[in-house]
Image (tube, rainbow, N blue to C red; front, side):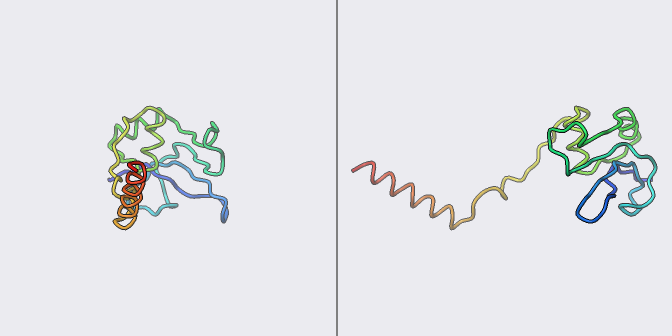
Length: 117
């Protein structure tokens, strides 16, 4: 059985509240799960202790059993110190496009010419 550690959504419309669960990967997002491992409330401030609550012992157990965390859960685990920080390759998305790079180069050339005079 392919097990995942993922978020199951609860709460009402525009008021999300998530449960961190270990579930069979074939089950629906909010469907049947094996065990509830914690909660995540994105409406709370980022520095709040209650934003993410996890049972770290059970989380380690499921990781030891081969459960794969989703990207969001992997970030929570990195913040808790259960996992080493993964490198994420998203460099291309942050770079400006060709036209913006050309405009920046022209602007830099003008500034350089004005400084030389």
